[in-house]
Amino acid sequence: MISYAWDILRYILDNELAEDNLELERLFWFYAEKHGFRENQIVECLESPDFPWFRKKKRTSRKELEMQLFILNFAHPITDEQLEQIRKLTGFEIVLVKSFPVHFDTNKFFVTQVDDLVDVVSEFVKTIGGWNVDILINPPSLSSIAVPLLRSLDEAAGRWLPIIKLKRDESSLGAKFIVDEIL
Image (cartoon, rainbow, N blue to C red; front, side, top):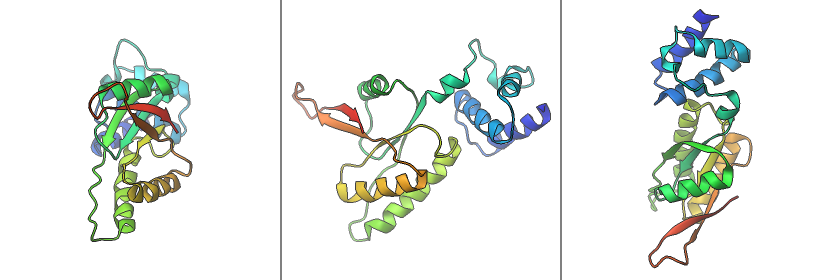
């Protein structure tokens, strides 16, 4: 079992799929389960001295790993205040906010540009465990891009992906936006 677990770990490390130890552990869970490991076998590997990457004072449980959220951002950068609002609304720990710049050429068909963007996003999503992880979308503001993008992402995921709805903060003097709801 340990030798096969090493193969899984080597695959993750060789392909640079994880940016930090938490992401490494999440991917290890994903691939180990995919290859038939039982939960107690995975925990045994994670706690083994053969795997120093996973050593930490507090063990991350499977339930905690399931309460993690990845945000795909296609709009302006998400502020710390907005991240905290998302945490409160969802109850999830935000693991990663990945931004994808949406700068479309108005002289080219948007549909082909959306398809290219979805290909890039799909490749990234493979590195975080595929479309079965909890993903939240911050859509671009231009509806002629947002609608086909959301349709294509939902199709790739095989389900409706939740999106962030922002609204202008009326109590603010400047152009400040707060998270209104998760749709």
